[in-house]
Length: 186
Image 1 (tube, rainbow, N blue to C red):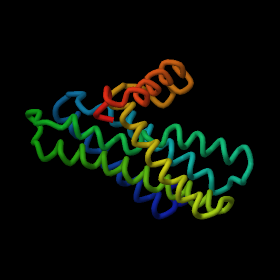
Image 2: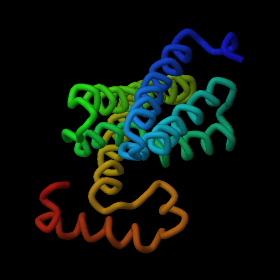
Image 3: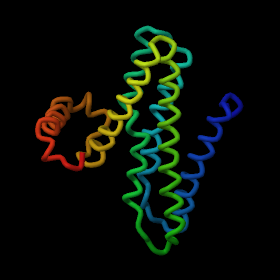
């Protein structure tokens, strides 16, 4: 299976493995479950990559556009890992530098997964859409992603809340647009 991966995918796998290895070593040393949200957050960050990877074999049909919709739904989960740096603080007996490497490697993985998945979506769109519209779409995707990261970090919504709690999510989003002065952080 490892041989079927592209060189870039091998690097991603090694990088994610490095983060998880640091987490396991930390747990074995301390018995503490601090930072054990990383496996779940990394899984969520991998999902947009998996959706975009499938676009290599998709066409300009409902399947291709459903893959893009799934990708867009989970896309904010990848750069969301950068916000996990907020959890960084010194926690004895683990050296501060060790936890910093753990947190930064997780953020790095999220950033790389997000950028690569966006590039794959862009490649797919370039096959079927004029370049200017693709460029505008990528800017829109980045803005929506930033909004999604904010909604996840500060309002604590998840990607699946689009389906699980659509009315609550829509109302919260509408309020932030109608009353932007109440959401200065946004």
